[in-house]
Length: 215
Image (cartoon, rainbow, N blue to C red; front, side, top):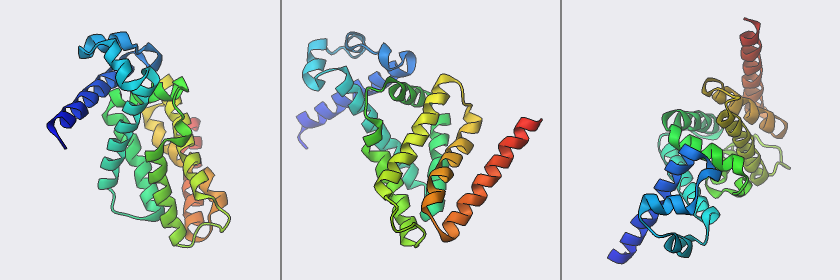
């Protein structure tokens, strides 16, 4: 890559990093091209020429950050199938707890409805990889649509992420709620050991929440 191209990549990365900081501070709707121009030292005209508008700029920043987060998660996971999916869910919650700026910005994007979360490529691809591993083990019913299921997993997580961003779900409960959502989606689609493991996990989570409500 030529030096000029390297500088353009660095410039875009700097703009997107500042956009994330602004989203974490003010939410998606609170980000303006004028404020971003002020913080980056790049004219609003140039920002519009580079991205076309705020939604396109923040969408690119969002997708870029997701790629980085999921790559880091995958590098730390060395199991397959259902265990892979469970570990990924846990790692996503760990990432939320470890980087509140990223997570607040993420939640504000979800709540804005400005970006089509249903078709976000990176998390869907990673969920799909786990589901394909389960299918290789013979534990998905023949008619199960894995592409659709991967999107349903993402949408379930995103709905809970919005609740976390609103303060209605605590970080301490988020992982358990992610797991419950995952089990409820996958149990009707699976068979054999995977279905048994999901059912057992779901029943355990229900007992956990009933017990917590008792005291």
